[in-house]
Length: 105
Ligand SMILES: [Zn+2]
Ligand SMILES: [Zn+2]
Image (cartoon, rainbow, N blue to C red; front, top):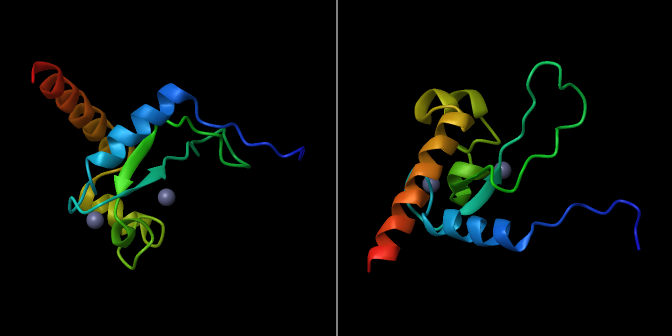
């Protein structure tokens, strides 16, 4: 076994991640991948703190790693669509709404 074992997502986290991915890209609703938010706040310098698997945003390739993506131009991206934290809040809300709907049907 390697010594650099990454923490795997738990089953519950995986279900959550699936739900988030199913929402589609936060910006354009196209099929999405998950972007993990990194908590690199002040006093947290060095390696990006391992973030929770709950802290994910659904983004399509273009808005994730493309020319207008969050990885390439985060400053502009956050200007246009809000900060990662703001987007995360909105995503959490959307998943909750979806959960309510599906429990009614
Ligand atoms: Zn998109
Ligand atoms: Zn990402």
